[in-house]
Length: 98
Image (cartoon, rainbow, N blue to C red; front, side, top):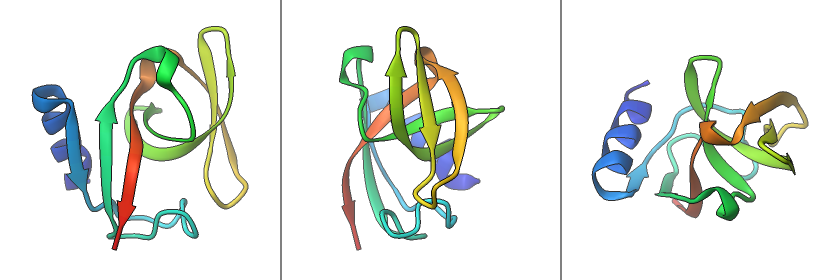
């Protein structure tokens, strides 16, 4: 996934990135190849759609619930992936364009 590598690099360098992710798990909210803007965030700013680390990879998913030091993530098709540590939330989606 080239977009993941680009996103991680830009976020670490500038705190912001624009990427065109591929995939269908967020269909209806983020379509494959749409322009998505992600910003680095503080723990207390976690909400809505986030860029997260999941099982050794990175993806865009919805924050379903926040509990103490964990967040529950899922996709836009109704699947719940599971709980991840807050530290694995890398950024949040702030804009989605064509």
